Amino acid sequence: MCGHGAATPTAWAKLLFWRDLGTTEIGGFGISAAKDPLLIEDVRLVKQICSAVTVRFDDGAVAPGCGLCRWQRESAGDAAMYARVYDHLAPHADADWPVHLELTLSSDCNLACAMCNGAFSSTIRRRREGLAPMRSPYGDEFFEQLPALLAHLHTTKFLGGEPFLAKENLRVWELMADQPERPACHVTTNGTVYTARVADVLAEVLRLADEVPRDFAKVAGSLEQLNQSLREQIVNHDGQRGGVLAEVFSGVDVIENSDAGRSFNAFYRLLLDPELIEGFDAAVDAVLQRGFTNELPLAESAFLRQYLTTLQRESAQVRGTLTDLSRSLRRFVETQEYREHKRLADAIGRAEQVAMAVLRDLPATHPLGLGLDLTSMTISSIGGWTLHNPADVRTSEQVTGSRFLPAGVALFERNIRGLDQTFTTDDGDAAVLQVEVQQGRGARRAAAAPCLKARG
Image (cartoon, rainbow, N blue to C red; front, top):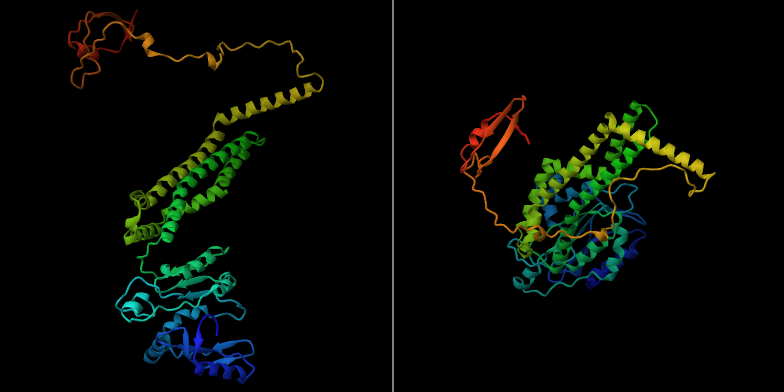
């Protein structure tokens, strides 16, 4: 027997008998004791085809302890058997490893549901059935054998008990996390467990989720760098206008097909899928309705509720950046801006060639006999700058405030006393307007006059 289990003399005698009966392998089912699942009371066989190295059970064979499958088959035929859900996992002739694994490693559970029993709930076993806790048969040897199997799995399923209370499951999940290709993982849970380990994992998930909008900003920066590089390539292009435009369009494709562009576009399409958005919202709502979320800080709960909106807002900004860059590249070529940049680049290139040719004959310090007009701007050291102090220009006279009239004429009506101005109209006719405004009177007439320019 493997692990920490035991067998009764009857079960052990059967195993020895079948072991020595022939030269082939043989498969069977161990029948455990009701009060001690690790004690094998009997061993039974089913119809099978055996060889020296393999065992294949007949499709119609039902394990002695599987009363449900037997009842389903007898009541409605093979098509009604629950076991049919595994038919798609039948191994192929060249399959050396299983691709699906279901594990029930512990009966530890914090609930005592009415339809359950002590085989699946340690709480029921202790309180309702009055039995001692089950012993775990899974030692280090079991977990040391798992990595070779996990490497080939496509799907896994964890049952219980409550899987998140079983330390054995945590060890398996750590092994799965170390795999380069991780299998899909399905956990049947009551959703009420919030341990320190769960809190740590949730904090890590929230941290990773918080980094996604920052990654969008990195994408925008990458796009800007690509845009600058493409502009330089376009300026240095020696072909005709058609060739330049072709390079621009290919440059847009470069942006779209870059690592940053492809990763962003994939996430952006994900956010625009109505079904995925609805599923995301439903998943967040389901999580936030769990009791353990009451332990979350308010800021983290708000972060989860607003996460989709945040991603949509940030991704829209990046998408806008990508669209603007694509358009700006086209405008860059289709306008004179491209020609001016190219002409300047050509002039700088020729000057550099001449300078390199001259350096072969003259040292860099050789006087050229040419004078350059200096800029009229005076350049001074920053150390000579002084701070501006508003108190240095403070007036010694009392400042009187202006009183504005109600809205509608507030921009025109002020308290103006003794104002004499000479104005000239737009059509050249001279007109002298004597304006005496007291407490805002006359401003309406000034506003209604033709457009005037002050003279003198």
